[in-house]
Length: 305
Image (cartoon, rainbow, N blue to C red; front, side, top):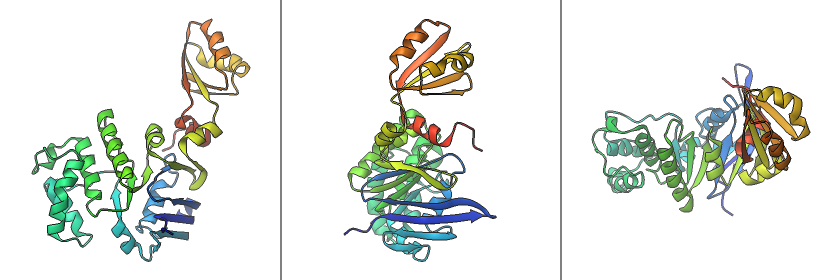
């Protein structure tokens, strides 16, 4: 039986007596994209650092390709590629040199690395760019170079920490396309992201965590079907909050007001839409429920710093 790429069992980590991860358990299957989602401060980054052997846990166990982490973390990381939250490319190196120097950390010879680099740059859509001046690359290009660098050791597992933050829609879609190609090639991906549409598109399964604990786990579409009403009617405009306080309970199972918008969650939107049609000052948006609705229901709408 194949060894699971990653198994986390009752992971515990605290800083200055304050728990960052509090008994978190999950595991990855080969060839899947698994999302680790949560608001700021939920424990995602600490979990990733523990999984990579960069931080020693206070309790629980971690197995990375069958190797205990952190005890055998260095050996296990030879099969892992990492795209950090912030690019840490060397601006004084060329595109190829960034990949070459990084590959040496895995004990790979220069001849083998130089043979891999052209294909990786082609995969990242950077083959036609100025090979010597990394400073001319856009943010999206640098992100793709960081992804190419993470593939230099031909890893079985890719750990991606918010890989598309700060990118424009075109760059995000290109990154998504490359990640889907990697999954089709049999790679396993562990993804953290604040973009719920990204998780919904890419993840086979995901966990939502908060306060260092697992809140829910499952396939995106299953979680949406199980955890939220099928229709959302957003009501905004002059007097939306007053309308919600007085009328929303008549039509919706649940209504949340955030700023100047009332979010009404309903099984059947028709009665509510007919009611709102008679109130032209109120603007409406009717849409199917999505993963962001589930996320906000489980973790709240309050701002996290």
